[in-house]
Image 1 (cartoon, helix red, strand yellow):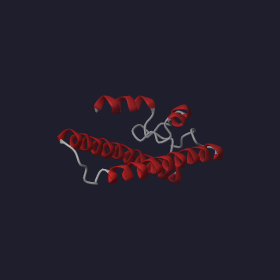
Image 2 (image 1 turned 180 degrees about the vertical axis):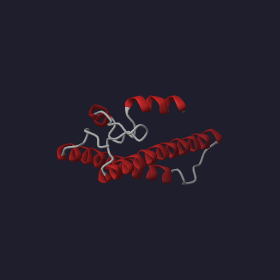
Image 3 (image 1 turned 120 degrees about the vertical axis):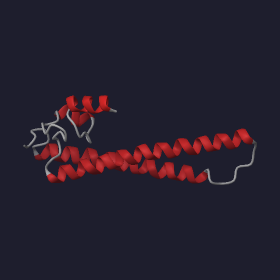
Image 4 (image 1 turned 60 degrees about the horizontal axis):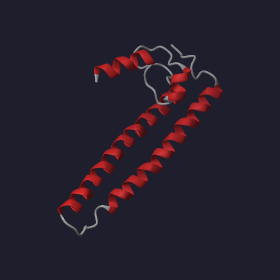
Length: 122
C-alpha cells in the first residue's frame, strides 16, 4: 500500500530537507551538550551544596542528551523509510499518515489514531 502523503517528488524533497535540518540542529545541540557535560568533569571546589548542584547539572544535561539521541534515531529511521518508500505509512495500521501530521512531526511513525493508542499503552 502506498501513501498519498509524500507521493510527489516535491513532498519527498520537502520531508528530506526538513528531516535533515532537524538532524543537523540536534547534532549541534548534542555537541554543545557533550561539551557542557565535559566541563563538569573538572574538580569543583566548594561545599556539599555546590557539589550537589554540579551533580544535578550533570544529570540534567545527560538526560537531555539521551532524549535528543532518541530524536536523532527517530529522524534517521524516518530518512530510511523515505528511501525505502514506506515513509508516510503508519507502522501500525498501514494507512497513510496525514500530510498535516507529517509536516508537524516529520519523523512520525503512526497516524493520529494509532499514535493515540500508543500513548494510552505507555
